[in-house]
Length: 270
Length: 284
Image 1 (cartoon, rainbow over the protein chains, first blue to last red):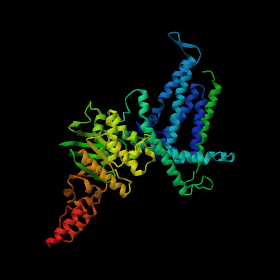
Image 2: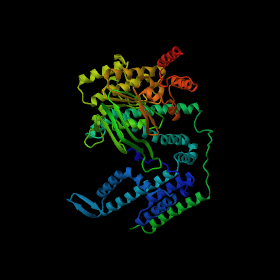
Image 3: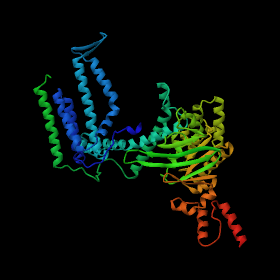
Image 4: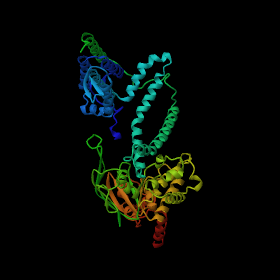
């Protein structure tokens, strides 16, 4: 179960997408998200989808990976789409016992919501699958750097993210271990009522918290021992370099965004 | 009588990915009831994976495991009952402690077994006293204790279930020599008193040589040998070859033999070494 978590996973590769500068990749992902949410009609929605397909093809990742990343959000998709179907007013399409109405607008909004959510997850998974977490946080730090003039803690934020990402696999492994240990003492994790199951989690959560605090303390100490004192004056072993291909990719993304906006203006009423 | 039996037991990690690895490779084994068994092998030799099969935490890729004659992966077998029969103490078990008091934590296992209040109380107190945890400690928070005490609380948590088989994975890892000595002698005492089967995983031959009645040497997921200590240490050279160190006295005796001195080869404790040397000198 725990091994299915794909958040923050990175699959090293040599594709065009892998080689892009992480800062540009972040910007392009942001543009992709703007595209998704500014598209008002179905033809306009096809543009970001097409953009995603191009990026996906260039990344040479397997389709299975992308599908796998969808797994955890399926319940969210179902809940939001169902809520949208039932609670948005419009012309009634179907009546259920005269109480619940399904409207055309409801169906449309819910359809949009499903496409947007799926594309959102796929797009951001593509980013994390092709960019190592360290490089990604580096890029975030660089993008946010100008804000440091306004006392925005860009370096601290990036460091926090790096550490958080770094410890995801460690914590998963630890959870697995503690679960096994409590199961060996006869803990029953898989049966019982909801309340009983929630209670059964206590013997797992407490040791997990304890060890997280211990790890945090050890890490802080280790960092201090190596004279870490924040981002000021700190240099990087690997600096991010941007080249022509990065600008080409960025221009392409902006072009697609313009296309979305144009289709929106030309054909507002779908 | 056989208490643990494996038939062609095989376990492969991450099948179908580039990380695929066979940790336990066609292991067929029989362990007799009441034995004190030392399991030895390198990091990654499959010993930890092997023992997790004995209480049903890992499902084998292939092969069978019998506990007390019962195939534990057969349909309809309640895994919890198997886990009460085969107690497993993991490496660094103090990380599993979660209750507010030592008493409550040790009683977690027995409580899960559905024992009566009185029975639980009796078991907790007996186990704690066996492990050198005095009564006044029982109402303290386990998180305030020293590392060695925490370790013993965690071991007590499994021992208090009084399993027929007790398995300990490196119970002394990270303890100082004094703490190690203590834990070893307490485990020995437990074995002696309860008469139950004890399996102890270690990577130190020195430790195992002192108490084990049988030694299981694992290498690359396979059983390298399973025999009594004298028979195992007869093969001191082969054991050294697979990268495991033999006790220092055994090494000395092996060097003596290579120098042409005709002396026995199955020496693995200092006391016995002394006796052997005395006999040899008298013989001269």
